[in-house]
Image (cartoon, rainbow, N blue to C red):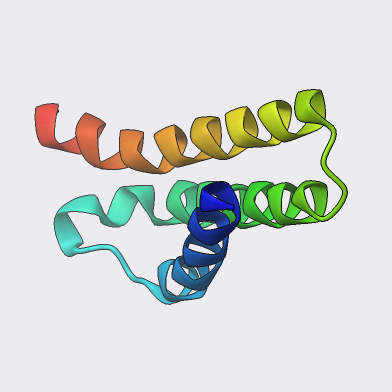
Length: 83
């Protein structure tokens, strides 16, 4: 139930991210950002679909996919702040 709520919240956060334009200092990363945000949206959608008929292994794999996609998005900001 908590996973469903978190997934729903994440799904609501993806469209604003898709519309976001990175600040000038990160402008070189815009295309990569858009790609990984799309991947994140797809992973969240897959997680929500998996939760409608959950098999534990599938749910865990979907959660891992969302986590990996989130880390990709986060990595854009981490790399730019250290470079």
